Amino acid sequence: MTLILAIDSGTTSTRALVIDLDGRVVATAARPITQHFPQAGWVEQDAAEIRDLTREVAEAVGGEVGWAAIAAVGLTNQRETAIAWDRETGEPLAPAIVWQDRRTADACARLSEAGHAAQVQALTGLLLDPYFSATKWAWMLEQVPEVAAASRAGRLALGTVDSWLLFSLSGGAVHATDVTNASRTLLMDLARGSWDPALCRLFGVPAAALPAIRPSVGRFGTVRLGGRDLPVMGVAGDQQAAAVGQGCLSAGETKCTYGTGIFLLAASSSVAPVSRNRLIATRAAAEGAPAYALEGSVFIGGDAVKWLRDRLGLIGAAAETEALAAGVADSGGVTLVPAFAGLGAPWWEPRATGLLTGLTGATTRAHIARATLEAMGNQTADLLEAFARDGVVPSVLKVDGGMVANTWLCQDLADATGLEVVRPANVETTALGAAMVAAVGARLVPDLASAVAQMTRTDRRFAPQSTSAARAARRDRWRRAVAQALAGVPAAGA
Image 1: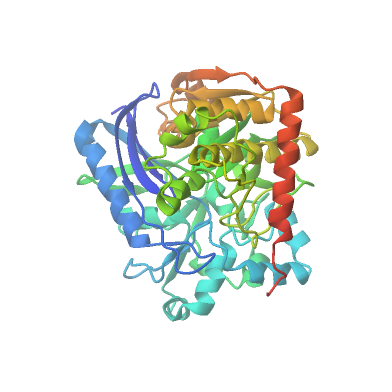
Image 2: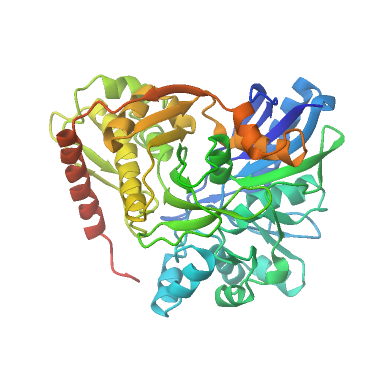
């Protein structure tokens, strides 16, 4: 029993991977998760679909390798997505409100105008933005009669995707979350690692409906899979899991994940960082004493390529963008600001919308594809500049996520940021990190540092090839485009 079942419930797919103690993937299965867009700014998923597909992929890989070989389960998940369910029936009471959803932008603005922003940031490390979970749950309690009725009857359970899966797969025996996910809700005291009563009152979220908060490394109970009860020995939000999978354990070590969104995270000291540049402080996955990280969150990364494919029909598959981008000398003056879910860090403007500028009669789909990929580097450079103003200047940029299988993109990230980019052998480091956390929790590996040494490998390094002058010109063009996108933001309440 030396294999780890890593469950990675992401935004666009749910995956299960069986990983050995050398970090090799032994088996994998994935299923796409349907995203629903009922109106502008709203993003929803069916929590029952998340549950059922997660069980399906876990059963598939467990059956492939043999359940007797699996020692423990590690769970990682899309963060901030808010779910409400009936703790007696175990069924969801409303659609899951996904982290990209912007419906509570006005509620956040009202709280900020009432003077609560400083208090919230001081307690949670977060900014008042609809990205986080609390205002989503508050909206459900106000707008969904079934949620309000369950709350009055004492049957309401609230949680992020990790809590929902733990509850569902354990048959209702476990209602818990880990400290990394809890730190993304706007309800947890970042330093204490506990729900804050004043914050629960501020947002109107009943503390009794929230899950128990536990350390990321350790036993969360058992889940029933393959006819067996398997111990869940580690849980972490996807970006914190990816940081473990990239070996970012010491202060200043930095990784950037390119999946649905873009998430730059730097390990911090044992004291929570305080950003003065619109970044957020969050808990990191750790064993023992609390650990923290500084993070910049961008809402649209790979979703922009998905937009090219599914909405515009310019490509048939995401992989086509690599050849298209390489087939033109530059973007032909085209710049894409993919603010399809507002602008995240460092702007934090939920009402911003996307902008495609620089189009001419000579523009081809290759230029648009290249501009879409270049937006990844442009947004990463924005984050790195904010990190530098907060005193965090990485020497290299460790990258991961499905997008970085695109070699052209990795080179462009180096050119856009001026940093050497390091790609791991396993770009799905979110799942790898979940496996590492569970391996330590199960005492199969002594600690996270040992897990990093034993289970991670580098694939390739990309040195910057662009000149500083070319980089500066690109940054100038990008800043002008962002300014245009921000200039088009309607007034609050409009």
